[in-house]
Length: 364
Image (cartoon, rainbow, N blue to C red; front, side):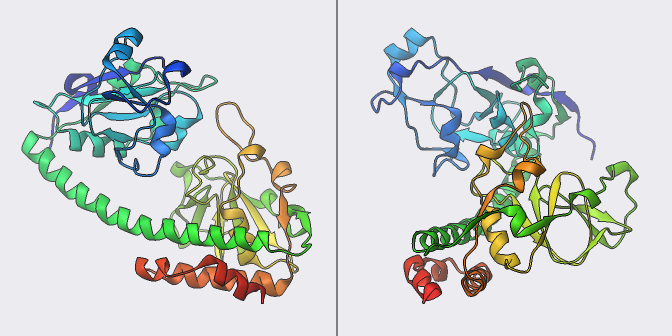
């Protein structure tokens, strides 16, 4: 079915927030939540903005000349590295936002807000951003975004289906998130109880194979049986392979560097092709590959990043990152324990796990 093409400005209003001086921040009284980009990371605000760290009164709003945006508006970062996190959230009440946030409000006689949200979920915010340092979005660029617009009754049907898909994905994400939190807890508990375990550069426990990587443009790839990997996982398949062994891939650029809930490293095995957006590591014999993978997956890598417009983890910096090197029996025990946790899919079973007792078993 062919639906008419429209520009976003025809069916929605695009706006930006206001300056928010620090003297007005941190107040709990007031009628308007005042959201900043950081509030999008608050637990409970994964989709709907329901937790506010700042409120303002009508008098303060008037003094700041802050615009009030309607319930069901979509908000997202419009300046700096936060754009690349690709976060979009829904306002649940009339709210104000600061000047690092962009807001899109549906004209409800033409566009259903829930449909607007799912539409934005399909958009990479970086496509709106300039190449300046720091990157930023122009209001007119967002307003000129063009898409096919179904009738209101079709929008409602599509939004209802996508709501259900979101709920299923969220349930799966909750399990993954809980697994990662348990593994983090066990790992930190393990580190707190360690006994003089050496800390070494990554280069001492892994060999870098980046020189073998070959990027292939999407238009030039020949489909085949071998996975083609990038910064965050498989990006397609190709007709040939470069590697054929167990390896760890670590994002070089384009990784989830600013999202502590998502890994920046993953394991592969077998015949594969890797592009130049992921570092390739071969584990040395004195380090268990699973243990090293779990260390790197959620590594606090932000202090090691370079790049003004696109965060990058350079090879030289990567290979000097400090790695804990416990005895092999502890490495293997930790890796086996994490593998068992990752195999659990029942949240109730995950909630029963006690990281301290698991750590003691690991060290005994």
